[in-house]
Length: 297
Image (tube, rainbow, N blue to C red; front, side, top):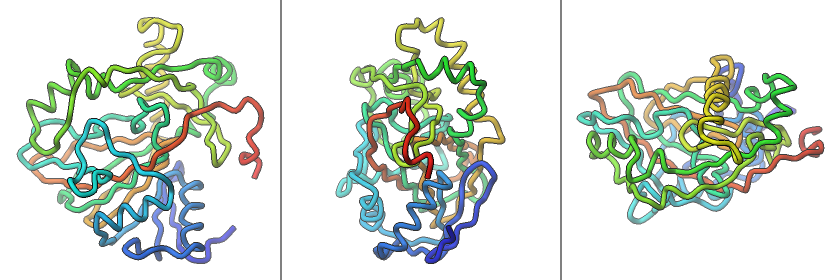
């Protein structure tokens, strides 16, 4: 079905498209919003260029997709806690926030629907973000491995990223003054998610494990789980499943956290980068054993 209100330009074969003809500083009419939402489902991550929006406008656009999240470990703006500043100062020598392949907040019982990231200040070079298509990652698996994975549940937690004794916490505490991050024992809680999840809107199956938050398979030891998890982590981000977005000031990326992993590249040392992220709350992951109605549409 052709788009009437917007122009959609794919940036790669696997996923990702730039949307033109959209000004997010003003409320979108219903027809334009419906086309943006369709482009989001069809392309998994969508990009907007040359936007000039306030934090409040950022929040208002995100609210069209659902309730907004307040990150439990990273501090948002004082007046709009839903807006998370993602900053790396030129003098910082810590890693990037988000500098590993992952899906956001899968340590929640209901992980995010998606995140909308707005670039306020970008480096002269570097600082791109990569995205990977988890539908393609699942589809490329053998039938035997698909059958095995569909019977598995994975345990997720925030302990590696935000635990009091995590390597990440020590590295950030030593090397960064850009963001206010909280570390503690409350990051140790475990939640269960299917290893393969069905997207609630498209009905498609996607791989749902990630290096940052997935700990092990339920009923398996860490040692038993790790070889298969390591294979899945590497498989999920094969180059042919990915796209890469080059930021400019005023650019926006909105990715579907239910079927996409992302990775913020840390290759702009000595330069400043500032983004604002707003995250839309999601739903509890599930695996539909029968054909999902949306998959046939």
